[in-house]
Image 1: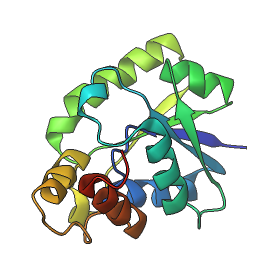
Image 2: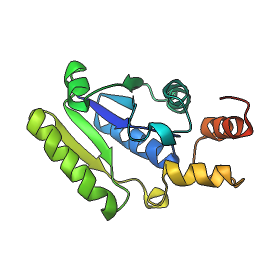
Image 3: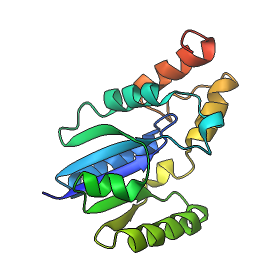
Image 4: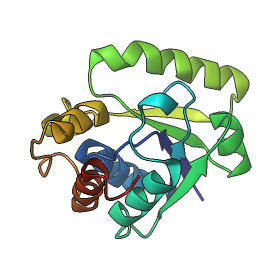
Length: 164
């Protein structure tokens, strides 16, 4: 069975993330969408790890070969423990490439048998980022075109103070 990991903070998941998930799920028998806890982003995350897991699980519920899991620790260790043969990374623009390339080379050095696969989202989503979506939502703009309905709802609730 060919299994891949698609890691990210997904704070919140965007339609660009969903596009990569959908296409990666066609390339692999099973895809684990791994929600990462990133120490560097901890102070800037809007949603808790459990909230992000729940939003992602709802957004991916129609995909039979996609599983959502928490990623705590080293990605290549998580991939090895789950029997993954590949790590999927999304590239929106050339600006993403340098960082992603460095990470892919480091991961290859630590775990040579796990390949990194770069997927570009549809052109419609290349400008999307969770950071921009959160900013639009904070300023009262509509994010309906950028995130799945469950994320629209979660953003509205979070920003209105209904969930903390």
